[in-house]
Length: 96
Image (cartoon, rainbow, N blue to C red; front, side, top):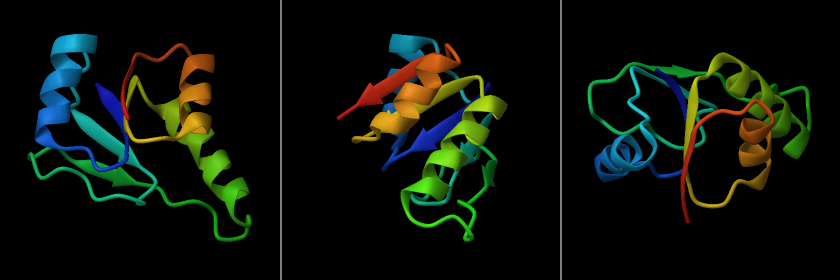
């Protein structure tokens, strides 16, 4: 499943997301803020629009990533991404 990843996601997080939330990524979607885990899964990076300042660009990208995704794996604190994922009723695996 296409999965938005945010934060320092590790192979251990991926294993836990599969076990705990049934999230098995086949493609990562990212805004490019953090590197993808090196596990052989392709990553599509779509950075925030440089014409939108600060958080506006990041928030806009949260929406576009979640619209294209089937699940979210979030490591760390990103309240906006989690709110958007909940709005679209995506399965979420979140670790602080």
